[in-house]
Image (tube, rainbow, N blue to C red):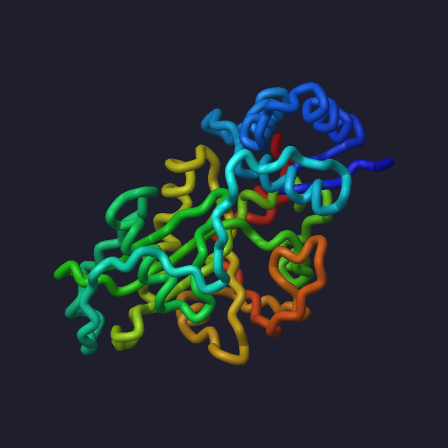
Length: 294
């Protein structure tokens, strides 16, 4: 390796590769978790709340191994086999049809889901069973929202996570260059899943929810991760959906993907072409995203 590259949003130089190789060689008893945590300490790799970015570091190590820069120690315990159709534990829930006008459901109860809670178990169950893409879990910065009616019936699940590494229509819309994108990508979040439960048939619910979430997600993100977000993005499969609810909630259609995976920085994966929608959370989002952040 002769030049600096960016992996998992962090610059990795030849000296960093040598450090990792030396740590592995000098500490044969270390597992991958121990190695990851020590690297976070040496690199001072933390989020704005001071929490080490252990999961991001482990992902970085796996990607370096996949590209033959390092050889990681073997797993100290056998990793669980994860099926592409993984299903979380079933949580009992009603499936009787909910229909009628939106006002009969108001005020909606929108819950920011915390890990390892009853709401988390229900969220995982619903999203894995009823979303057409399924759901196997998520790593990195993310927020889950579980939406209930005023009477407490679950209506919808929304998941926001890491933004796509690179997509030309979005990047042109912002007006940043590749260096600025690498520094500021974590100030964008992607609406990775949006599920209205299949037995819920209420006009205008989806666009109303998007509007409600857009008003609170920036504060929720700051509360959870200690830094703001300035722009929302999502990708809508044109073969399945028309994006009507996003347009109704004033999201901006900026273009289409080229039929590659949203995280396809290293691999070429053919996927359906999708419409790219963006929603600025503040008026001066371009300036904020283009400024250099530490």
